Image 1 (tube, rainbow, N blue to C red):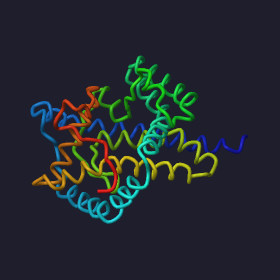
Image 2 (image 1 turned 90 degrees about the horizontal axis):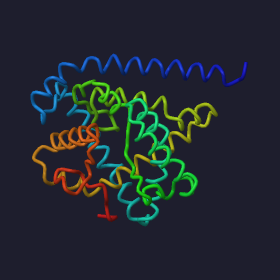
Image 3 (image 1 turned 30 degrees about the vertical axis):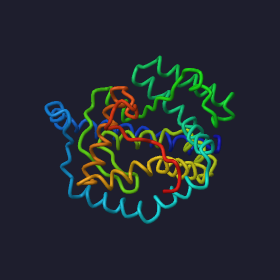
Length: 264
């Protein structure tokens, strides 16, 4: 028996378990889904006291550590470097995007995502350059939370995860499945090089946070209730993604801007 067989069996069993958990969790969202249909702009937040506590912790951590590091990152790195990091991180997630497109029955989207992966990996030097986007194949994120939505599962109640931030019952279940099915994770853990996976996560998180410096700053300054503002922005974005609407389009005044000039 190959040495990596026990690992593969263990990984497969975990993945199946996570998928089953996702279905069980998403199946509990029926009532909140009906509530959202009656009030399209409402957010079901029965755990608000707990969520606010976690949110306060995340906000304190962000102010003390994550935001300062993100500002330094913006200040020290030029635009082309940050663009390359974002392109590379997106390219690594292409297999998950393809898989979720297939699970959603969106074979055209799967074809586009596959073409993007090939073009950017080969012509974009491993994904550092978005050659596909320059040739009319824009990036469109897909995850298992969106797949569950396409399958008819409601978003469930709003949830704030420690460090990771805003989510929902459906998106949390989707995140768990995507995490265990992530090819980068499977590769790193199979070779006992977990640092690859954790480093990827840290760099991706830093890059995403660095692009939100201005947006977060403005939201903190202008919101009477910062928690409610973040909850609303997150929910609007996720619902837009489920409907395949670009939540970052300039025509939508409520959209969050994903760009920062540097040190502020």
